[in-house]
Length: 83
Image (cartoon, rainbow, N blue to C red; front, side, top):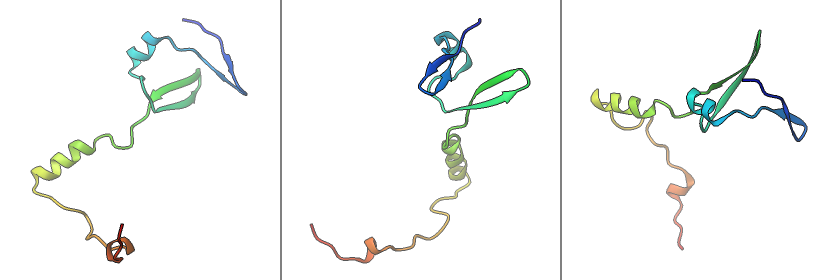
């Protein structure tokens, strides 16, 4: 497939057909752009919390529970307030 750059404000963009986005698994982002010898590469970037669920399950199976550090009280915890 060939396409052209289109103007988007002061930048340029490329229209990517829906079928390409779905086939590449890029729906929703985030994405990483890299310059390669032959052009640009668009690839899915890891989401900040990817893998957290599996890691929590592994910790539970090992019997690890609780927080890594003891909670430290804040002013909110010690200040008596009313509505």
